[in-house]
Length: 498
Image 1 (cartoon, one colour):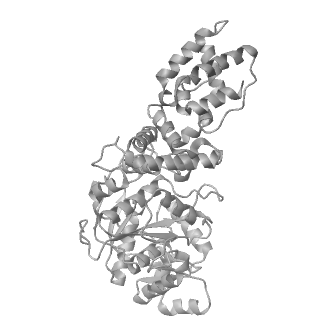
Image 2 (tube, one colour; image 1 turned 90 degrees about the horizontal axis):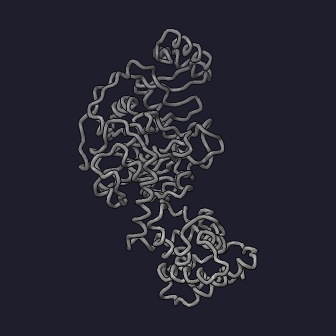
């Protein structure tokens, strides 16, 4: 097969992500998209955008034993949240649908039978019992093939006889040697696929396997580029073989190297901290996750820089994907999130969107009556925490910072504590709203403390005020809390306990 260079494509570039709705964790778990899947979707999106092409989302749901209801919707929602939605496909529509494989079975059956007629595939009538015996015997002898290709040698007469008797059958592809092919990432690749057992392409229940379905769909949908994980690299000759049998033009293939944990083990869907939905719930932004997965095995970018999707489109090329397996350092997630938080607050063009996102989060957790309705207040909160160890918006809603959005329960004060709060209130009343800043507040707090009799130590003085204002014994310095809350809200909270 010839080598195609990007972005020159003829016909116009069409890439796709084929999402297999399987779940190996819990039957009720719908958090399908993990970091590996996010990276594959991202690369397809960037390739299509950078080449002025199309990105198609297809759903592989033909394995009914492992299909998870709701997974397709979850996947679509996560891609939408990450802002890497395809141009067409599941959840979007388009002229080349349907985009769910279970709705295309008649097409797969048609082309499977066409391969049989061409002599490139055959009906296999072996029973499940015989296949299990063959598998066990192969395991004993160390022979890797799980099937002995017995039905490949059936005469047409015998095959027709079994067919007329209603004997259940599947359809298998006749494997043959495939010359080395060119992978955009790995270069020239050869795999002796002819030494493997003939694979099933149409199951007994009439459903296609991935091998047939992806080839048929890629051809009918005009796919020019396939970007997928390298677990499919050694299956590629099976797909190229079918393209040759059908006399169809094969797409350009690019297989992405494995994503590994820092200890070298393979990322697993069983790792809860790698699911996009869980990371979103933890408050990490889509941009942070995108930069995390892109930084794993992609040359030509600063590992510590947060890039926007538009910037990534401009710099993207499959030639920058490394062949080596890439390690995902989850320890970098915090630093990337912090860099993203700083950018989203410091950049004037982004800050208004950040304010709106935080307002929405606050309303969801604290209701409509919170001070988050005031965008200037929310903006002040964000500015105040720029220099704090905050790496995502959700941390501003933690229990220790709930005081930002809701008044704490009033404390029951002793007479002396009430005098302390009254002195503080009276001192702060003298500060104009325009001068209600940390410097002025500290001066008034010091003045109020000096007037107290008997004297109160600074630590006890500040702790009492923090409990009144925030409902916590630890947290940000009191002067900063007062500045964030503002003059009116600060005086109101102090007055409420008097």
